[in-house]
Image (cartoon, rainbow, N blue to C red; front, top):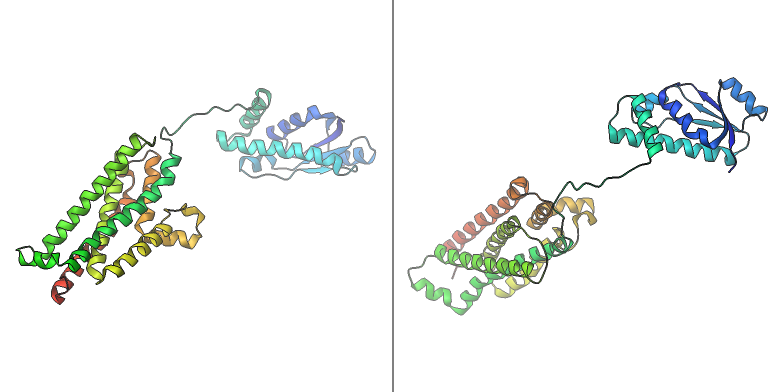
Amino acid sequence: MYRWNIAWVDHDNSALSAGMAETIKPDASRLEAMTAEQADDEILNSKADLAVVVPQGFAQQVMAGNAPSITVRSLKGQEVTGVVSASLNLYVDNLLRLRDITNLQDEAELAAEQARMAQEGLQYHEQRLNTHTPSAALGMSSGFLIYVLSISMLQLGGMILREKQQGTLYRIRQAPVKRLGYIIAVFLTGVMVLVINLLSLFVLTHTLMPVRTTLSMYVLWFYYGLLWIFIGIFLALTVRSSAVHSSLMPIISVITAMLGGCYWPIWMMPEFMQKAAMLVPQYWANEAISLLQQGKTLLDLPQHLLALTGFLALFLALCVFALRRSKAAGTFV
């Protein structure tokens, strides 16, 4: 490899500029410090292949986190200046990265650290900061599980409409059973079904599927399932026909699941859709599960729990309103 004769013009005269000269010196046949006028004469007389001009304030810009501009002049074209410019830019980039990593504020210490690393070589040491490794299998299946919980809890609301059509509610009305008591019975039935679903999931994840789940995840899924029980009851109290109810169930569950990130990651959606996703409970449930996988607890997720609680309170109030409205209109049975 050909070694160049380099005229070195240092207007900064700092430890960092001196370290840069030492860095490119092994690749030069001759590197001599001189003034700008002497460097121009050396180039014109072909005594130097190129001149490197370090601007004043070079070290100050580096310590401020900026990349200073270094001038390389030559009459021999890009073949000469390109190689040296690449070496100089690499040195500056290394200084900036090293400064960010070590947080050194003294230029002499930074120059010494750069020289030491150049001599010893860069060594990486891996250290785990989080002992909780997110499960790819759970991350992919959690969204579908949230969708399944939604649709299964919605179906429980259909019990009310089916019993209307079969006349079961009429017979119940003959007994001393109030409407609210009947709704509570439907709610408790939904809770039992929800618990059975989660117990089945627990057995699967500890036998057939090697997926690590935590108690916090089951508590979150249970809380999310309660929300959709209230949504199902409200829907059943609102619509008049089982056919309409059956048509609305997949529309509501699928659209909200798509918007909430059950089928694909939220970051793949447009920005305005990511903001709109916050309007559905699936978004908060999926985000909470992702954070739980990273080792957080439910106490670390007050925002997500508050959002789910808000949805639950909303549909509980709507259920009460729909129940009173049906009682006043005589449409419950």
